[in-house]
Image (tube, rainbow, N blue to C red; front, side):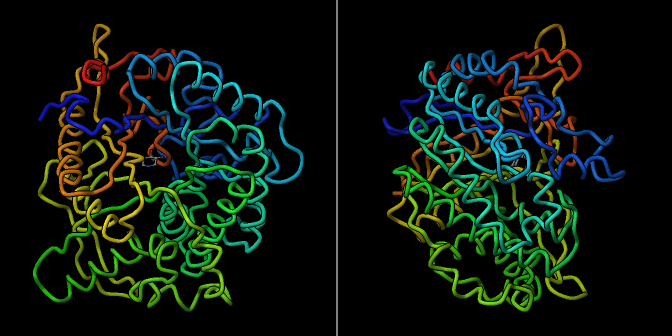
Length: 438
Ligand code: IFM
């Protein structure tokens, strides 16, 4: 259903999101090497071995991109800061050019009336830290706390909100168990450690930001609705396992001070010694919860060791990613998170779709994207009507960009990017949204 701002509460915020490595161009401005550069340089990891050296060249075109955001009429710009741009070695001497870049970027947002929503880490781990074991290393929380301090001492006085780590599940499970993202490991022990260290790092980062006097701090969690393939108890069990390590592990670690039993079944023996003592750090109070939602997964039992499950192709219409379109999952997660933390505002920090968009005679027609957004905003309105404290919705993504292991061919942007010329062309969905957001 179509909508306007008037269909949402007065204070409801609309936004658009991006991340540093996916758009900036990491070859510029003194950024250090990251584990994504080496992952992409390893044959077979990334489509056409594409990498983020130039990406959308946002590093040089940021003013044009901020103008496009302002033209869209959104209230919030969710961006991320690259650890390797700020601290090329991961620790030690900051790269002045990198800090200057984020300083200018934040000022540029404020000049255009945009609220800067910073995420400190969106996956470009400095190679020097990856060489020391990356998220497996128990020193990560200290290194991440130091990085937080360097960044926030510079821009913390002007950001509207801040979150430490984008999508802990991807940093932990996708990257260390499924091997689909850097560092490309498939190792249960590495996974358990990474998942736990990500949460301790999150907590340390929040502590540092509170110490610097910052407010409006949250966590950003990706969630996929887990749907059993049939009514069997085996499918129910497999679905509960998926839900536990995907959707519950991080939220419950932070908000209940425990990990779900079905996740501990596999990961428990591999967690670092004394993990139970870290929940005081992990559970630092937050001001909001961010939900990144795209799809559901159909889960069946499978032979083999934990988690003993398989994802089965589903019947719903799919996006260019092959992801089923299932707005009801967003509604159900909003209700679930709201039941868990009724006093905290919730933001949809990412939602959107990749589409096989084609630029023809200066125009990109993407009615599918608008329908996807409309469907998910309907789900938001249903949840709000039932009392969920949903306070904002941020679209992924402003620009077509580097979709990690899938390279540049999956187009999530409201704005088409020609990756040869780097020309930006707002798509039909951009124009339609600008109309509604007036
Ligand atoms: O592009 C990613 C983003 O980096 C994190 N959330 C999901 C998006 C789409 O896959």
